[in-house]
Image (cartoon, rainbow, N blue to C red; front, side):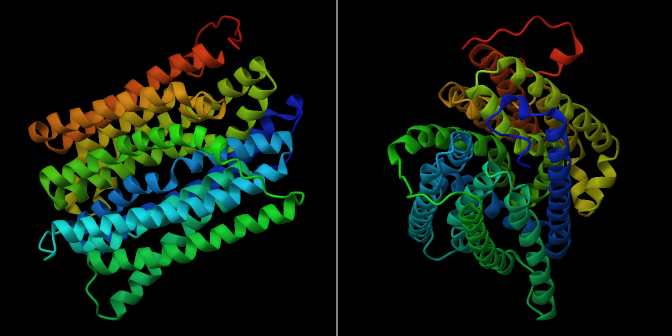
Length: 450
């Protein structure tokens, strides 16, 4: 984001500045997500349904456990670094960058060591289909934690390119190139070499990104002695860790449980539907990337009317493109799934159900981001916990009955429930209305509840 978008002056937060920055961010995000999607299609064709299913199963577990490696510090960095920039508290800004990196690396490595030990204890002969791939993929956990940490830190520093390009563009390109080299070497393209390749390449990418973030801080902000406010960080981080865990559960539980109940082939095909539906959320994610620091600036200056203006505007930016994408995905679902291979056409209904959920997600706008960036994470974490529990129960009940269609229904119902609940909390605690319906129907005067 440019420096004109968020400064210490409320008047400087202009909608058109945010629109320009959102456009730039959207270009980067679309390019990155398209490349990642291409990677999934290519891997599915290279590896086949079963091996691709194992690959996705391991990746799902690494993302699920990677949230614990981050200890909630990724979203804490987004919140606090944005706040430190508004207050020009450079010592704490430098302290949280350095301290959080070290904490995440140590925590992630400990989790990987424990995971390795558990796998070897449970299956010392490695007879289980997933054991060997998981023994390799478990070392993705600290890397996933560090990726998310640097992504959110870069967002707080208003550098969208640095936030998303390493993970969404550089890493997939390297995996594709590495896969071609593996093919030329006559090594079978199975889950084990591809997981090994992805892990090794992510080491290079994430540590390169970490160096670039540190260099940006050194170049653009005043020198200051780092202040390590560990207690202050973890007062926020532990709540966000719990909330982040619930979000990952909401996003990954269906893939993991489909793999457990129905096998790797079904997990692979269902994963294609999940990844396709998630493309709709690129709009919401991109807008949140740009406006999160603006939410902080307006809220801490108690400009609730200004905050409502920004929220109403960006909700429209989120909803209408998401609706158009949703209609296109439902109309051409068969064609899109055919890109993965004929076996993936079986999840046509799953894709349509998941797309519906993502469109309804866009109706409520940036509710999750608003709650975190305004310091109301303690209130929102309860909603995420309830939604995650409902999601787990629904998956356990519906998958044995309806197969992967049941997983899609469970995920969509959970998504709708937590969005409605968070919309109510945003009105109660922040004093703004985030839903698209606020733009479409007559609206009462917004009153601050602060």
